[in-house]
Length: 245
Image 1 (tube, rainbow, N blue to C red):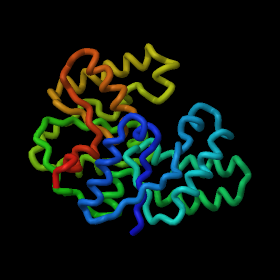
Image 2 (cartoon, rainbow, N blue to C red; image 1 turned 180 degrees about the horizontal axis):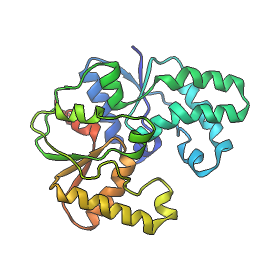
Image 3 (cartoon, rainbow, N blue to C red; image 1 turned 135 degrees about the vertical axis):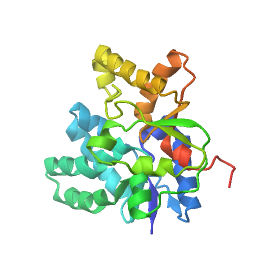
Image 4 (cartoon, one colour; image 1 turned 90 degrees about the vertical axis):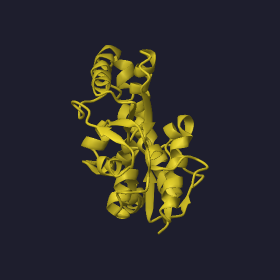
């Protein structure tokens, strides 16, 4: 199986360790992972902000960069959702039939990490060990676009040493929503406060999710309050630490 890592621009810029964790994890499970150097943004920001014509060249570049791979794995539910569902909308709107065909070939091969592990590789126990009290936040895209369900939780429950606690009102939005947090700061902050309250109520040491964007938003709030709660991408819990076999 030819597997490619789609790192996403957010992770590449701010959280490269998450991408490295994905590679370590998949290599540990016996798979070689390629990193196409031509990859850039999936166009999610443009699509969500109303600049859809500007997203079309990014969709074209995505299909070219990842052509020929059997699986395109990403540690981002939001970007996976964009590539799998919204690229087709953008291609159709462009009137470019060749682009539509290219999207039809690549989109079904895009997987968020946890669905690739559970649905394609058929594993839930990846041999991870993480001796911390952890809460999982299901992000909006993982819930409502990809419908990941309990896939991330199944993987977390199989981690040895973990104390996995249920987050109250787990399916509520954290208030990030990309530019929503900027354009509707007061509402976003109120939503964030509710999410932080839930995290603190369960006494979690670590909050994890399938999107570093939401973890940045929640983690920023927790850090400003000096709560001591860390935010860690799920991939970095499932993967061994760098330098550890």
